[in-house]
Image 1 (cartoon, one colour):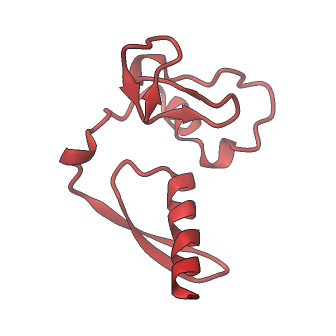
Image 2 (cartoon, one colour):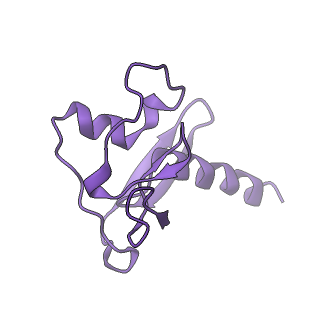
Length: 103
């Protein structure tokens, strides 16, 4: 979690990986939609904008109840992640699992 780039008093988990800045629900928009971003395929901000501005409310970690199964190919890694986990966080978690299992 980090502080919103426009509202430093707000904690948020939404981060623009292209510019490495955090944004709260009120600030969620692509900062450079016309410039290529290598992170766009996994960017929740981009997908929320494509849906027409429907924002996901931020849920404190203590209140997250749902979990989802994420399957990574071609390594056939299957992990369970909490609701609100970004694709990048899931990939990092899956990668760290493979290091733990290899020991």
